Length: 530
Image 1 (tube, rainbow, N blue to C red):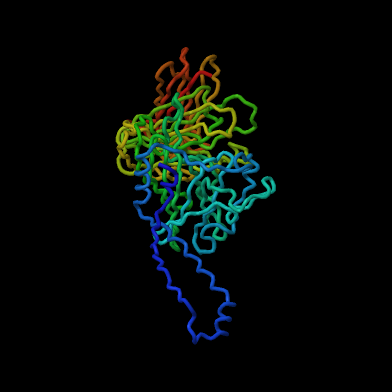
Image 2 (cartoon, one colour):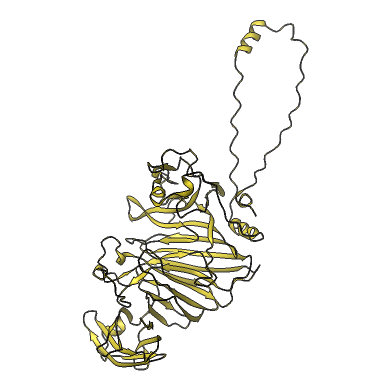
């Protein structure tokens, strides 16, 4: 199916039949000659400007119908033939195309929401169709000189430049009542980012993941069109509809976004697979982890820790809360956490202390934690964590998503719903102690690795007797387990040593127990030989 088939809304105009006028053979004898001359000198009236065609209607089913019809045909990547220099913009040139802030969508409409658009160019080579929905009608936006200004690095360009959109961002008074800050971005493939009040961008989400970390290569579905509903005055939320497309599937997505201390998105999606895809990731998140206390890779970096997210948190279907510190491995690592009907999972930036990062520009302590809260039952599957080795912090090397036991099946629609939280902490209610820091270092015993894990929370703050630390390893041996109070955090510290005994990979598990009950989340760690 062609791009026009997707974008076009048929507007049928009434056809007008024009009858031939009869021409008199001669003028009427009583016509006044002067009047005839005046009439000849007067120019005929200009034809009326035709009214613009009505905007196509938009309903709750519009995107589903478009996605369903698109899935019948083979995948065709949208493209626009751009003239130079727009077809090969450098990073600096791309930044020199600036959206005219005075043209922000809904500016001056006394709403708590404004939209600004991103142009095509640089890394963003795929055009994205943008529609604004108002009173049940969808108006298509045009990327041209009315919305964008070209800077000196590009020079003069036609009024139609920059020709296409690559995404958009939402602004609102999230931090101050008198200023509209940016807090949500949709740009690039099916990527989106958001922040809550007082936060800076960090981890990202995606619409869908297919074949992540597979030898044949990952497939990156894209949002090729957006329909954004104009909020009513006083409404605390904004609704965004998106059309997903890829060689394997199409999809209809709906995001209901609530900005605030935590920015929350209610997401519903239906996929229409073109073909089977056994390895599909639902509600995927991506982030960056370079180094930290749990993975102190030797390098010349004055900053103690560098990461957007510190660990993976899982609240599984049996009610167990799991904490898995992230690492930057030497080789690709994939971990699968089997589950049924998970209650939630996400990437958590637990440390909010500047002293742990010492970065005056990045401010990693202000990066949001992102939590996926499934709605309904998701059935059997696993939460899959992918950790990719990187040498610098410009790359997202962490991915996590829900992998259903059954992947996409051709012509079998798949519907799922979930809530995304962008906040300092995850919203899961947990009465037990939680890990506040994991530290790994060399032991005094040659060949052993020392682990130090601090726990905090009400479950250990006022505990009369010290809990027991249950430490297990799937191979090797664990020795010198010590539990002591840590008055600095009103919690407890557990330290132990691992002797790998020649193994190159060891899976570790730790939990605190008081009496016959576990009183902490389960700490998991994958040690690999350096």
